[in-house]
Image (cartoon, rainbow over all chains, first blue to last red; front, top):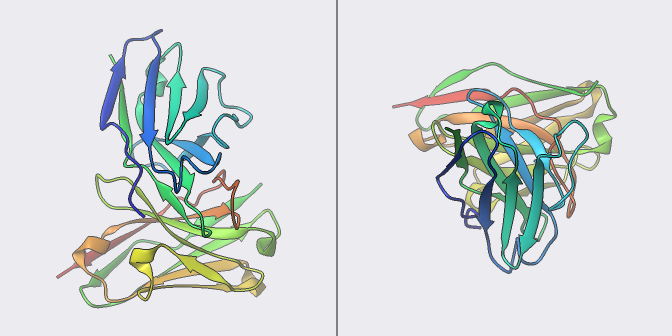
Length: 110
Length: 120
């Protein structure tokens, strides 16, 4: 069970769009539509932003969207705002009742 | 409202064990699995495993098998996670999160985390 691969960091200016990738294998991301994304501010518990690849929990702005192609899932944040600056983690079902997280991506809003 | 209240910070010596608790409220404890996730300082989230509070069944990530135990006390709606043979690599914040048993499973509700520091 290797961690999913995410870029260490991404950045964008306010109002722009950024996309964070999450690459797994055919045993996890590629085999199930059960990818979720979490936002984590320093010293805080993670917050669910996307589940089941594309679904958004109530209360999460529609600026956040998810997608998947093959073994790679993506989180896109459009209309970047200063408050979006945070760490983001993907998580995928990996079969056999196990899950795996990505290594995390630090988003900087310039 | 759903709440997961975790026990306080711990400092342990290498080789010792630590047991973290997670008290659930605001829902039926036995209706949802409890997952555990840890985060070492400056590092990412790491899935550890889950316990089914209804049956007591557990599942662990491969790296934790044999060294992590998960139990529950349904009478007080509390889940426990114990790590034995601690090393400095186990220094981390340990989170409980309400989850499920398979497939479409995601974490809406999290505890605030318990910092476990392992010193030599």
